[in-house]
Image (cartoon, rainbow, N blue to C red; front, side):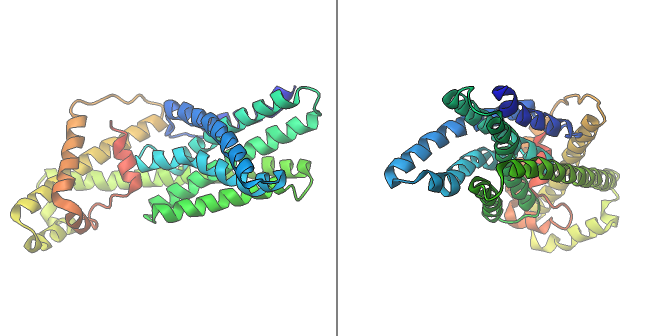
Length: 330
């Protein structure tokens, strides 16, 4: 029974989060990688906490309240930080699921270790608290860090500012949980009531925002690309704006900018179309030449440079979410 109560709740919670991903944003390979990293992070945390205890001669209470939350949350967050930086996470939904998966892997390892140490003679109450409280807390803290980090990047805030804000919240919750200021059973009850409700609200809002973003941007991009290909772009406000900056750039640069806009729109439309197909349950068929076009887009982006890209921001504003969307074409 100790295995059932200490390990099953966090697996069930993760499965429910995965099912809430209606846009199929989560890669199963990255989900397994997240679980694996959680297991590795648990092992690294054990050795780091043991080393710090010996070096600093820490009391157990000090360790679990102030030191362990820092080492554990930082180690768990490293993979999320890396996945976001290389644009393998693009939205709040997939960030939260990968974050919770890391925490789930960590909790499964930690609880298995405690079962092996304490044996089956321990009261069932302990395993209920660890399974429904501590395990869900581990997943929730890393998921909250992920949500705050990706939300900050979507708003084009500093990645370090967003990381510190997310880590501060994760540490506050983790350390507060380990203080056991209230009855452990009541604390566990709060965790299993508050966190699922919070995630349902966040996922519903994110799904709605994602749907609106896809529909509005898709429609706008299709119309702009149609105007370009029909030779009517100059008559639009976007075309007038591009004409107005001609005097600041060479003719060759203007041609590169024009082709960059056209190629970006084409690829962005295809990427958004694929997301909508997945959401509707239709298969996504691979297209010939996509890899070459992505390479060409990257080369054009380098050619026009940061200044040229800033000049085009009134026409196409590329943020982390757009880059992630484009990355899915690979």
